[in-house]
Length: 378
Image (spheres, one colour):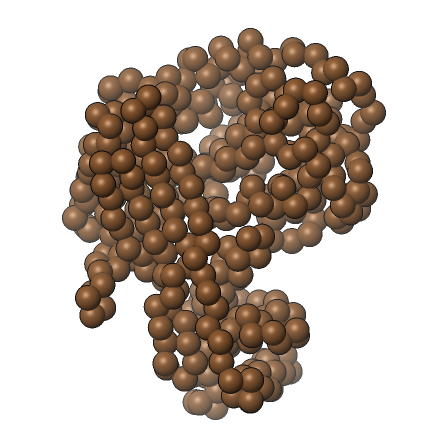
């Protein structure tokens, strides 16, 4: 099995950006320009390397090639995004790879791109930003650019990529070091580990919370040690964990509601499946069913939110009740959006710059956007 840390180091050491790998300080697929550029690079790498894997490393300082890390990226619907915008889309895997020298809230993003076929060109399916539907991109050195070329692509990188991957194989020392390191760092939340199929090791830890007959975890850290793949859930997240001999299962919940009448709703299920041939898969499935409310009640809340937003925009002071309502502003806009209010999403987006200096409300805004992102491409 490939040691992803070694793979990243070998890619960075091998050469500058080239036709089979790219590096980025960060990506932003929450905005149209960032999404378009990401799709362009995926398209170009897929076309340039139909016979082997291509990679994008995210969290690298381009000036000195140093690993600086990025925030955890939990967009499990990234393949759906690729499928929606690309013709003959490649298979995409995004993994959060932990490095010992990085802060606990930082990782390196590793995007693995593999073309489904060697005889079909990947192209944009529709317009996005300044790129037109039908555009085809190719890697010219370290640059992704539009290009016209023959379908019979030359296999020029397979031997190089295979050599890099072979030099990044796991061994027992890397596995044991990873387990000991995790247990030491996460001793604040009673870390545990389990071996699957006599090969894979998963470590996890989290803060427990009991609600009636359910046990939830927050601040959850899950590490698939053999692959250096890390799953992370913040203090705002609440998840259930279960497992058997073949599977490690995480169900993420969101606590949504109006006027204090909140309910725990299933958001997403992540399953790590283990097989006897030393292979594994990570599959995610959206479980979310948005809560439905009386339209008259929602109209009243929507109008109150708009009035509060206007006060923020004109920098008028808020009374005590309005400051309390401000904390509910992002999530109530989200609920209105799920209940068919066409302007609610636009209003939610306008909330961002107005609450960015209020850390508590801004965290709730980001949580609302995270939920929206998870369901958007489903």
